[in-house]
Image 1: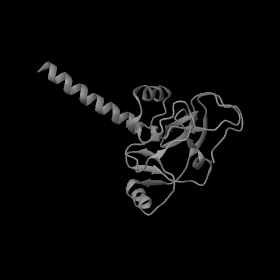
Image 2: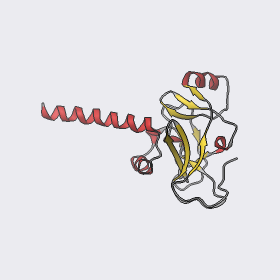
Image 3: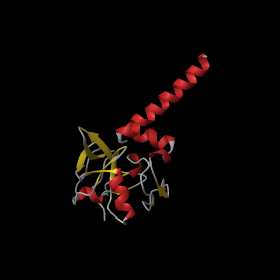
Length: 163
């Protein structure tokens, strides 16, 4: 299954909204331990969106996606990051919202840049992170966390140099 463009879509177009119920991490961990196969979209450190029963449940991962996530006013949208042709699959890189996600999976996206196994944001290469950052499709909590770590590391280095 997947979600496909019904018409040509220009770059930077909001396509759909992810509308599942908000679920906290402990609930997901319990569900996964019981064998749940539900899909969850991580939106901050401990909050996820569950299945909605709508098209947003069928947006697949790709290591070379046509879309990304846009976070706006406490809502999450799928936004094209390039022109999308009619009948082209709408995909995003799941790692752009995941940190310490409770599962991994083998990727079969078929792109030349396929990473093989999909984990979380920390496993993306520097150039891939920079590309997604330039497109504005990384979950804000991941960007804030990365900036905090960088600032802390830079601050320590600066203090060490200055004595």
